[in-house]
Image 1 (tube, rainbow, N blue to C red):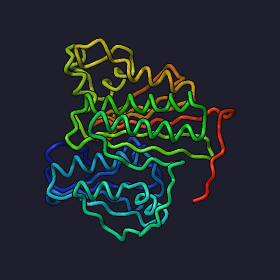
Image 2: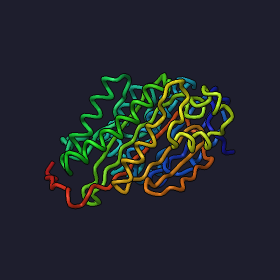
Image 3: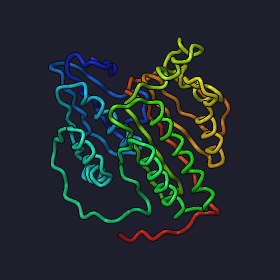
Image 4: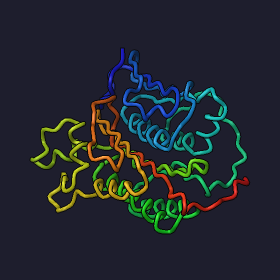
Length: 297
């Protein structure tokens, strides 16, 4: 029987992470039975994006606080397994007391700071500043200073929102990657906090929204769950992203939104319930500004 995640797990849960970019899908296979344990089964995963990395880390860390035990089954695909290790997902899961099932490959760790920002736990504004700076330096290797600054600003906005509003007891996870052949950048931020709906419900104007409606509202200027004159973070992010042919994927509670920044009609839907708020930004680097970077290990 499939079910959505909810705090206070009754019975065990198995979360199937199969195929390419499983956390990009509105539906994630979940089945429940047995004791209060959780298993993330990635045995059939064939490709992972920064959103998959950050989302799995945040989800597993949150569930570990609420369950007797949480385990993660490594992919059978050797390349994917090595990638999860190389991007520090397995190390972060171990730090969160998640048991790893399967043989962890030993890697000769090459410096890939030219294309990767491994999964990192963000807990405070200083961590936000460091990760945003690292993202700027990463993207700057491949494009103009102004484009790199725009990417870092978008990432900083997502991280600041998560640190300020999420109330995540497990912190915030972030990851990034540049794909040289496609000339694109992917940024991802995921927390295990209260979610957009609960945050906006602090404002009486938005108290009765569904999770999907809350995501839709958060994409409009001036919408906030605080008494401050703010609420332009996501609209500003979309405005910047539109100059890069950008796309945004947002998940929060059982709300799900895939947005093309340049398209005014933005639809949000109900989806599989996940804890907290997760965001993935995809940017196409301006072709005339791209720089060549050596691929030597």
